[in-house]
Length: 349
Image 1 (cartoon, one colour):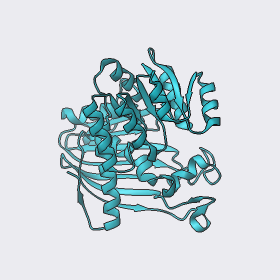
Image 2: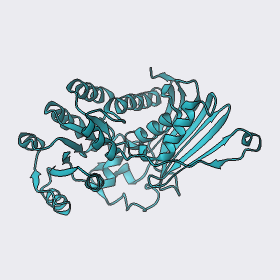
Image 3: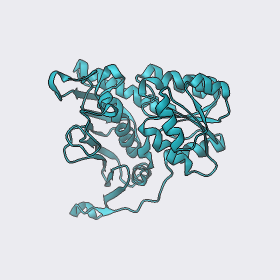
Image 4: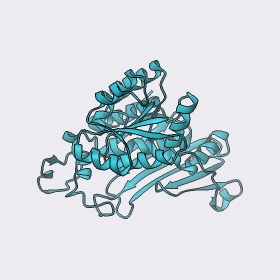
């Protein structure tokens, strides 16, 4: 697979490193509007072909697929151009900034017959795949309840740098700079993580979203700090289970922690990952009476990067697809709508 990388921000480095480690994948070109960033990135990763805009790269055309690592608001126009050119696309999350655009991207990719996937990186957790297997197999019985959270604390600590002085963080706090806040940034991850583990999607939800005061005048330089910082969803899944999904950047002491617990009438599982190491515990059978939890071994699973490369090689689309990301974007849009209306549950289906 000959790969083009669009956008050379910090996440692009992750794409480059992961794809270079996959046999049969060659990064042949990069696209970036900032000349200095393009030169630095291409030099670091030894990319010979460099383009200041996507149109020029498409006109050149010597690539099979593209990794779209542009800012959120740019995903839609750039991906639509790639689809029209018949190129397979691996897009960063969120797929788009709203459901209509995300749906348009999924429709177009499916109609064109190209491989289309979204980088929901936490699908690389072996524990979440094992939890889903247990839930769908009936090993947990009838699933009655769930709880899930994505906890970050970079608005409290400096483990990833100082957000007050670094633009790579400040834009995430400003709607004028294309951010949908914690909803758009990590909401897609925890909704995918929780519903994938439970083996069932959201049927209805109610929600609260909040933006906290973080700086004098709620502004730093050109950045108006108005994007949301925390949300809480109460949801009913299609399988009838009730539960919660929450995410925040104010979870002091938690750098990057995803958790989901699935409770059935014959057993329960708890999943945890920090994006690097994951674990799974189960309480089932006779252990229910003593509330004993035991570790569950989980075989490794491919990364999303490996899944995309394999999908392009086989010609068969992989998961998570554009359609999956579009469906979650619909939930994110409804989350914001439910919070604004504050009128109770909103049906998803």
